[in-house]
Length: 114
Length: 116
Image 1: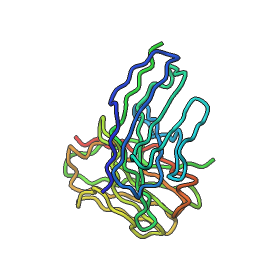
Image 2: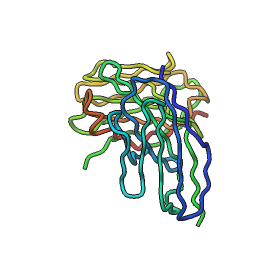
Image 3: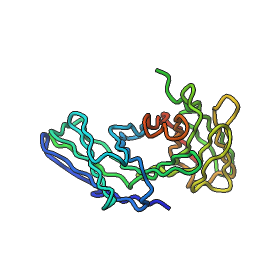
Image 4: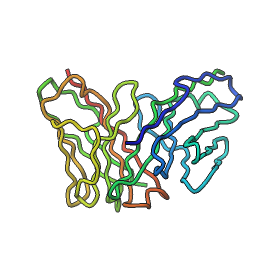
């Protein structure tokens, strides 16, 4: 089955700096890669996603890149702000009988220091 | 806009008791997914339903069962509760098939189950 690895597990940056979180996946059939931000005790919130037919996507300060050959995808946050502090999860999905279950990475705890 | 509604928000049960969690998907969404998230862990896929039929199954214990009803809401039934079942349980809904690649998932606010 699919396996998603995420690094680093914790990341501390100064406000205004950039943060990069990296994930690798195992199933070459995976075709959808969302990133979620989760604050303590709250639901995962989708911040950006990318489909397998796209190499890069950007939304203001957030960007995601995908390398299908290497089975890597990364989240880039620029000009970080204290409110970006949260746990970030990458995920990958593969279709099984019209079901697109998400396999999550282990999460990265991002701390943005004021 | 309507979101995914989960009830109850919090639930405290004793060991060996049963619990029922409910999920009401976004209107017109026909696919429901259940995830379990233990403390400090990533969400783990339990089970999914499409058009009231189970479509995929993950690491769901035999003590748990779930179903999707004719109005597309879903219930997760948990019996013989154990301390290790304490977790956040999230439900997510989507439109069926490849539309999820366009519109993504929407998660509910979750049910925090505490087993004492």
